[in-house]
Length: 345
Image 1 (spheres, rainbow, N blue to C red):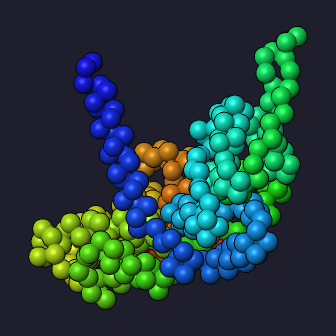
Image 2: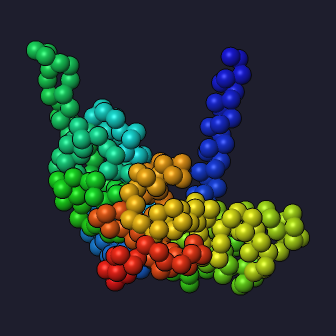
Image 3: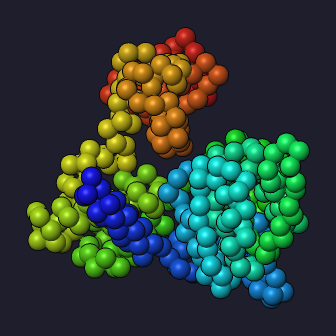
């Protein structure tokens, strides 16, 4: 028992160090941020206009798959506006008192970033309405005959919400964001630029072939690209005297079972299963989850978006169906499309 506090302290320091390392790789300005040109241009206009008016920037909602830069953009907005960024997540804000504590600790113009905002409890979400519009909240104290409402005025602030599931946000909350912008997967050119910048910050020796190989297998996601760089760097230090070229990067990523398409072991297992066991589908999400031993939410949020966007998988009302590209990866001849030719359109 005596070692427990030391263990917690060590874990806290490790998590803080990991967060600091990730933060060090984030671009601090819009100029250094690669990709998402439409979203960046919209935010440039909003921050520029707010600064000219010496006003608080309006609320922003960012949506899209994880790892595309929602948190980074929140930090850039805070940097451009010259304000502090306070970060929390939806599940952490369990009670209205938690929200009140965060809001009253803000300074004028600060940025409050709520990740996974769709997971904010409904009872707390209702308090956000008046906070976003009128910059005040009414908190109920006590219960029964002693219950009373206390109005708290809060500093004018900017709320930046981030969500991976826009459809789970209620209409009243969504309508209170002046800007709603979706982030998309990155093209190879932007990812090459991100890989180059990260390698420069980390002091990694890499040539153009290595940059391209990592970018090609990063699933269109900067966070994944940065994670791959760290492993490829370790591999190069152990096996290639610290230098990364196309062959070294390919060998390292093959060791991670990430192929040249960016597909990992679970992606390929899903496609093989659909081809060999279910003749290409359609198959329900729950059935697939049981077959591969994974949670349905993980398949839907982590694996399916990339497979669908790249054209390996298709969602239909009846279930998941392999596309011709998916059959090609599975190495099988199409066998489930003959009876459903409309799925090929």
